[in-house]
Length: 101
Image 1 (tube, rainbow, N blue to C red):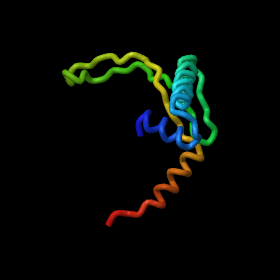
Image 2: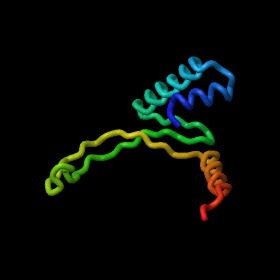
Image 3: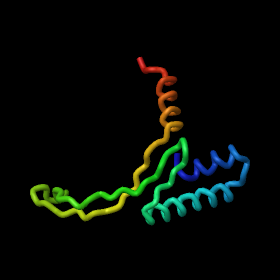
């Protein structure tokens, strides 16, 4: 599902026009990014938690010349930790799916 189809699905579900849903989704993205940049997490109870994580500097193989090592700098990356409601919903979906023969 891409952003356009997500907007359409939400719009139909809550009976709002697509522009309003797009505005809310864009604002959610903006606020989430701002919080992560500030080092804060965004917790959506039951759904999950967006967290900023620091990936420390390390030596790695150069993709163009695997025998040569390059230094990869420290970087902050986003992490998503699924909540209980989301995990349980996915477990149920897996159990309900018929197995292929």
